[in-house]
Length: 181
Image 1 (tube, helix red, strand yellow):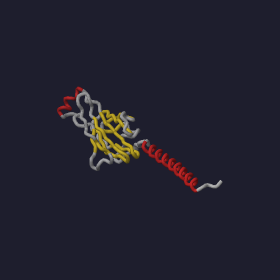
Image 2: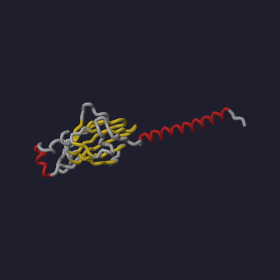
Image 3: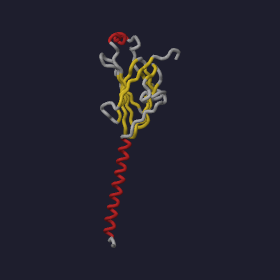
Image 4: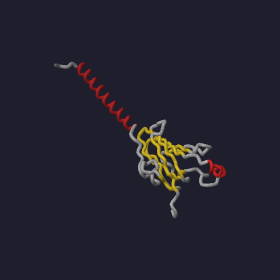
């Protein structure tokens, strides 16, 4: 069977359409997989142990630790640190600016500058609401040096890819520094 020029061109057009469709599907799936790639939390960051790592569940007061993550392409990450409110019996000391609970429960270094983290305004304790602060990162490595200044529990809530409820959360125990350190 001999093909006419028109039939050859028509068949070629179909072939181009099929190959283009397959290539387009491949690009779509590749981008979709990148978007939903997991956020990675290394065990150690530049400043020390990473509080986002599953292995870290306690830190010492004033120990330098990391808030470290590898956010995938087109991804977002929001980390919220929060505390329970100061017990009623110690609130007068906090209001007067004295005692172990009078300062903020954590702080972070601004030099060297945080890599890819944007710290939001610190929300101090008010009545029955504990302290809270949000840190947001976009795709790429994210690194921040952090320390905790108050003994007790800090809740770490992590929102991956714009989730409206925490993707996961955990509680970190802030322990007194060992004697002599």
